[in-house]
Image 1 (cartoon, helix red, strand yellow):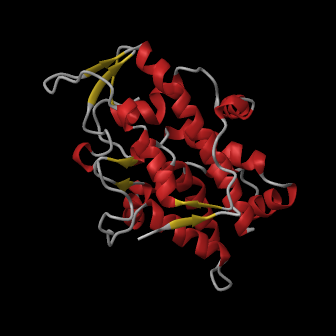
Image 2 (image 1 turned 180 degrees about the vertical axis):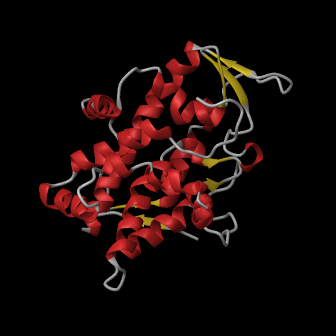
Length: 258
């Protein structure tokens, strides 16, 4: 079944499900805000009561510890085994990143939703589009999107998911604003965002296409995987391209909504 997104469009071993980490989400949101037309940007910021998109980009992660929002935890990712695709896996009744983005888009467009409901939906949307562009948020269920794989990177203990969330980003020693502007200047990244519509299956297929490189290490099951500068050198361009792509696609989606 084809499911699509319309567009005119450092921890220890804990298995967190945060995507990109706070800085990564701020980067995606800043790029998106920079891409918006002045009119659309004003409408978005009005709905956010004057807060910036980067300023609300981690709200959806912060509320997950609130029992009232426990239902939102599955909305941050999709589980896709090797050899499968989003259309072939069984839909989960609790939802996932795809169904959540679709629902949040509908709420913002709704003529009957309250302002508070639209504001919450916008905050989720800003975060979840970023989530969907972190490759391990379309991860293998067998290792919980890399959360169960212990790694040592630059002498620090973390898991593979955390490395892709924030570990590699942190090596660049830039705050989110400088990093966003750096990525916006890198035309060689050539993100594939400028399409009349982006299918969810396409975004997820892109994520899954990076698995060979993500898992390119001689893992010993009995020990943490030691990853070095060579791993960073091979994969940092992927991290950067996904951040830039996520920001530009988020801007396209918001331009369609508003």
